[in-house]
Image: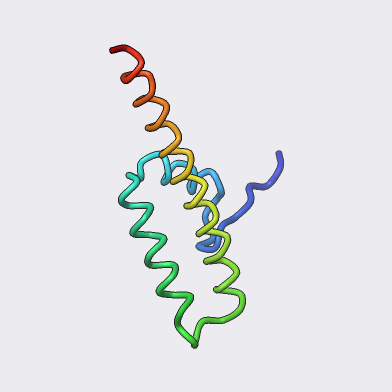
Length: 81
């Protein structure tokens, strides 16, 4: 059985997916804001910066996918008129 990829916190990638499924869009934006603030800290290590960058990309993808889904639902509602 292949090993699960681990994220910055040492959790499996699957737990990240589960977290995102439970996360609201507002939560995702707040998490992105936290990442930006952490990366602006001059004391952050290169390794932590890279982990935050990767997590930020995952959150951006989640946000884009969520917004795309909402836009699709709105288009369906608007075309029903």
